[in-house]
Image (cartoon, rainbow, N blue to C red; front, side, top):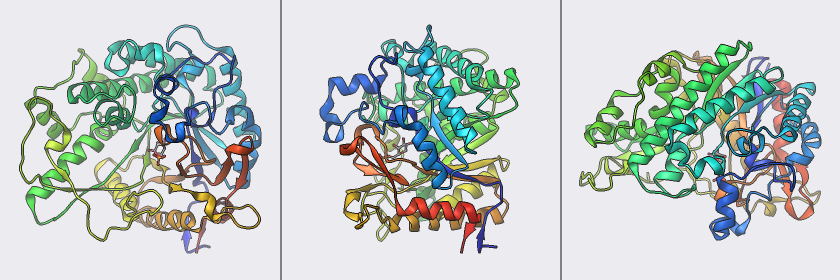
Length: 464
Ligand code: BGP
């Protein structure tokens, strides 16, 4: 038995998404989403001007990729359905080519002993719906609920583990606060409405899934960023960290798991006079439709201190009116991506989930290390020697192990990601995969050292 031994039925694998991997094939019937559109309008906003057309070509290579997943120890794998591939305009006609593709893809995974985890929404609003306001428009919630039900009906015989959203806070932050997703607004009122609608949409999808009785599970995937106060002994820092936690974590975590919005956040939003438009019945819907399991994406923590001059900008308030981000001296950084590495954060999240969220069934749905310029680590056999990634995953897994030993109900670990993939405006800047993709050689794949290592860990159910 290994020193860091995990249960025999632990989920080992990785995560990806449709828009980041599939690529767009001319004539396949896919409709436009916000990424296709934004790229045609402002290609210069994307790293090296590489857009969503140039993804890792999973659409044509998925059979080969499934074999590579086996060679890298996967017993499970997450991707997402692209809403605009399945229903090109977001509502209405279904693209039958997409139905065939997804059925074969998911079935192929299952036949090879890889459980397909399927997410419904990974930042990819169909353009036709965005033109009517996207998540700002309540009609999108109903369109999404219908899309979700369609997916369950079309693929529910093969797929038994579903997710309503990946990181729903990101479209809020990127699209309505910090300008890294279309439509690039800066407007807290809109941000709150968008987040609220995503929560309602998630509950509606959960309701639809449970009504169909398909004998599977449905959850949500949240990127949780533990908020650490600069000084634990300073009540103002502690208070500021709690507010950041409410904005960025509990805004989705509490409705998803507890069926209610966090009171402290509601109070702040009320005081700002920014409550969203609520339709009668919404709060009961949220209460009655919580998740069966929780996916946790963890990359880095947030370090927070109290604002030196607390001042809410009443004309255009922002979350940062309530706290300051703090660059802790001496914190460990990923030198290739610029994000902090704090392995214990993963343990703190799992412990918080155990203690304060009813120890809901959960798994690590993303964790990984982005590296810019990874080609420089290629050895004479053409393999990327990513020892830094092995160390990163190992160091996090040790803390996952500890949390499980202490009772956390964590049933798996998925790394971000399988094949190096296209990452929104960062395109191929930061590589994350177990498997490299050579864009100059028609997307040729090579397993990295970490992929071989991971296979051993999965086979051995752990490591020493
Ligand atoms: C996560 C997203 C992924 C992916 C990853 C890497 O938050 O769920 O879709 O983009 O971040 O991000 P980046 O390429 O910006 O380093």
